[in-house]
Structure formats: C-alpha cells, structure tokens
Image (spheres, rainbow, N blue to C red):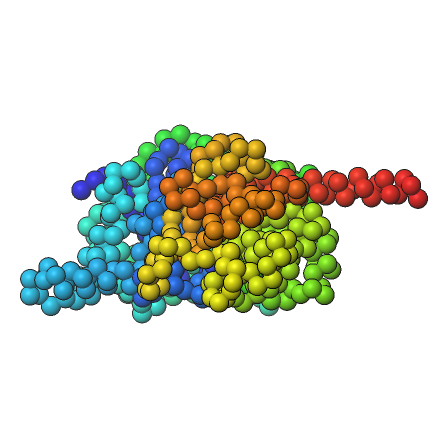
Length: 548
Ligand code: GLN
C-alpha cells in the first residue's frame, strides 16, 4: 500500500455548511506547504452522476477534462487547487452499486451473498484509495456528501470507520458542524454539535478535528466545552466564522492553524510556511476594486444562483484581473420581451447568455442578444447562449424568420443549430453528450485569438447540438465568423462578429477552467470590453455635459 494519507470530511447538524469550501481550503493550505493533494466527493444519491439532474435539484453540473459530469464542489476543488480533477474525484452511491451489481452478474463473488458490508463498503474503500494509488498524491481529502445520521450516508460512514481502523495515523476525520447563535440570550449553542458527534460515535467513528461554523467568534470557554464533550483536543476545535468571500476561507483556516493540527495528527512534517502570495494578492485586488462593471446574466435558472456557479466565479476572477468589481445582474430569460428589453439591458456594460437545455426562456435570450448586437453592448454566449446568437443572426440579419435549433423546433426549414452526427443514434440520456475536453484551432485576426494569445486551445464541452456547417458561408459573408474550429471534425466552436466592440459565443464551457490564479482569458477580455464600454459612456457623457 502507498504512503498516501486520507482525510475524511463529514458534516453534521445541517446541510449546506460548506464542506466543499472547508475541504478545498484545507487542501489549499497543505498544497501551499508543498504537499500534493487532491479532493474527492462521495455523494450518497442513487443517480450514477448529476448529469441527469435538474439544476433546481442540484445546482450546476461541473464537467472535468476527462468528461465526468460531477457535483459543483469539484469546481471549488479545481478553483482552489488549480489542479484538474477527473472521473475518480466524484463517486455516487449509484456508481458504487452499479460496479458491485455488474461484478455480481459476472460471477465475480463466487456464489457468496452480496451485501452492504463488506461488498458495498469494499467498493467505497476501493474508490477512495484509487486516487492514492495513482502515486500522484500524498494526501487525499474525501468529502462525504449529506449529513451524519442520514440513512443513505451509513455505508460511507461505515467505510470511514473501517479505513480509520486499518490505516491508523494515516487517516483522520474532520467533522464540520454548526454552532447556532441564539439572539435572545446572545449565546452560541454547542448542543447540536454534541449530538452530531454522538451520531458519528454510534457508527464507531471518533472525529479527530471539529470545524465549527459560526456567525460569532468562539470563546476559549466554548472551545473547552466542545473539546470535553466530544473527545477532541482544544486545539482541534476550529472556528469557521462567516466570511466575506469563499476565497478568504483558506486564510481563516490558516489563522486557526487547521493545517498544522492536521499535519501533526497525520505525523507529517510542516515543511515550509504556506506559500500564499499569489492568493493574497488576488484577495487584495478582490477587496479593493478600482472600477465596477454591471453584467447581465441571462438564464432560466436565475432564482437558483448555484445553477451558474462556475460562471459567477469566473466573473470574480476576471474582475480581479481587470481590477474591477463585476456586479452580476441576474435576468430571468422568461421575463424578457420586446417591450422591456431596453429597460432591462440598456444600462448594462455587457450581457452573458447562459447555457441550458430545452426551449423555456429561449425567446427572451434571443431578444436580449438582438438588443446587444444592435446597440454595441458587449455580448458573451456560452453553449446554448452561443447557439441563440447564431439563431438570432440567422433570423434578423440573414432574414430566415423560422431559423432555429432542432432541439427546439425539429421542423424548421433553417436548422442553423442541429444535432451532431455522433448524437443521432444516441437514445440514453446519462453520460451520452459530447463531454469533456476537445481541441480547438483559433483563426488569425480574431478577438478569440487576441484573448487566448495562442492558436491551439482545448476546452470542456457538454452538449448534443452544434452549428450547422451547411450554413457556414452565408454567416461568414454576412459578418458572423467562425473564429474557432475543432481541427479533427470541423465543428464550429467559437463565433464572433467582425463589426461589434465584443460579440463572441463559444460552444464549450470556458467557466469550468477559470481559477483565481488562472482567470479565463475570454472572461478577462469580455470584462475588459465591458469596462471599456463604461469608460466610453463616461467620455460621451462628459462631452455632452461640456456642450450643455
Ligand atoms: N442544449 C444545447 C445542446 O445540447 C446546449 C447545451 C448547453 O448549453 N450546455 O447542444
């Protein structure tokens, strides 16, 4: 067995405490001390992956380079660590059972009764150790989805119990809990934490470290009380106070010495002090912007901001790169029409039209794109957003009033967006889209090339439909050019307009690759264009006021 150390992060009291951010922040600190670290998420639901889940259920579906459709926490892992994740970094109960059932059908269990313990737990343990066995990581952090006490989490907690027993000092458990604040008495309460640690103990797992989410600083008395009731050292009670931004959390955990406590429990050397200069510089700029731009994010899931998590984060990174704050205005595409488009969009410095599936809200997206095109407002279309830009151009510039995507209108005479050939025979829904990283060659003299600064790129995809190359020449002649093409199959990956300050759409998802340390060049350039539009407005208005 390799020398990899395993850290498990469980959650108690309530869901949504931010296990993903705590896991990512700890990983960041360990990485900054010179360790190679990866983070994995175990999700206790029965779907094979979140690819088939409605965003209202589960927020964004994040896609890895190798085409895994995963939980949005993997986006945080990549953004914090700046290291790509893969299929192995997200495992669901569905996938665990699927492997075990396939093996059972193959006769691999040699006539034994197949049971949760040991067969399901063995498969969980195998999946946890797969990342360690690659030899690429000294530390694997495994975040267990759900809350301790849930029926569906039990096999995972049992696997943690077994692995702790087998690995001794090479494994530890961090339990994330909540200290509710009672305004009436002005107190932080520890009882829910005590109960959730009890629930863990009932499953035979003693947490080594407690990270306590709180609105207020935790006093030494409360730390001692929690330590006493929960069998942990006082220095293993870590305060996780509400932060202004998620990017503050690594520094808050550093102040609490979470990294030191973890390394000493794993019997690993501290190596050097964490190297976080770039991170701190990013935070400094994030908190002290010189300018502000207002960008409209047009989508049909805007009530649930998690549906566009990576896009929102990519704008934070791109804002910092331009030393400006990006204020996102969330605009519901179903509520946009010809009558209100000017009032909703004219004051914005740019609009981004979001990815999506199906026809709901599509008309509003097309109306917004027309407005941006005709009024020189910077526009950025992502996946379905790019497809809508193609439809809008076909209808209003090329004059094909019925132009559409066959996803929405299978009878259109002008199918400018059509199903890819490779998709025509596909009937099953799960994991069957064009997924993951594909190469793209960028055309000379384009805004895309200006942004990327190189002609060969690779980006992540998640779609079934594509620009219909039959119409390629007509679009180019009218001024919408294909500025990025897949060199292997000629699919159009980027479109842009020649005569517009910044109008660009991509068939892929650039947001998945943006990190604070590597902001995505297209987001950076788009925000720059938005900033230039602010500046040109203010030049125009100062000229106007000089005249009057
Ligand atoms: N529904 C479109 C397609 O499948 C776009 C997908 C997306 O926006 N991710 O091609």
